[in-house]
Amino acid sequence: MQTMDMNKKAVLLLEDWDPFNMGRKAYEHEIADVVSELQLLDHPTDLAKRIREIYEHSYELWIPLEKCMQIAYKLFAIKYEAKCIV
Image 1 (tube, rainbow, N blue to C red):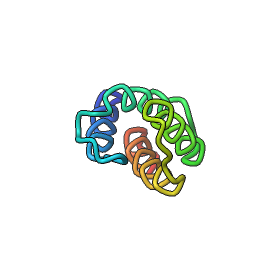
Image 2 (image 1 turned 180 degrees about the vertical axis):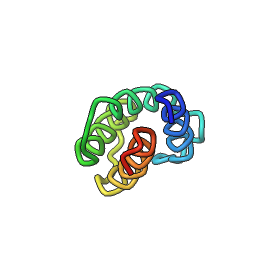
Image 3 (image 1 turned 90 degrees about the horizontal axis):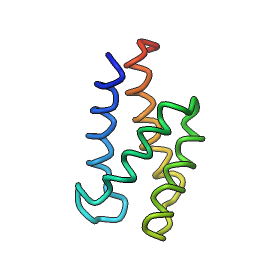
Image 4 (image 1 turned 135 degrees about the vertical axis):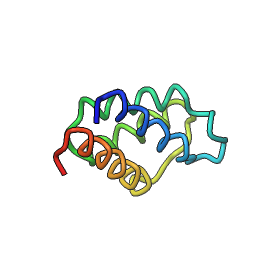
């Protein structure tokens, strides 16, 4: 799987993740930031912390780290599949 395919799958996953119940298209900027971080980071915990920071910065609402960890693990599964690490 190429990076572009990985990014598309990550975007679709994040569009379905609606932590503040604002609708699928409410998080376009945050999704772009998270996908960029996914390419840079190598551990789900680090990504979960960045996800929380990105979304909280935009909406000034708190997200439990556990919810961010769940989505981070799913994103890393996509990343590992793209790199054929699995």
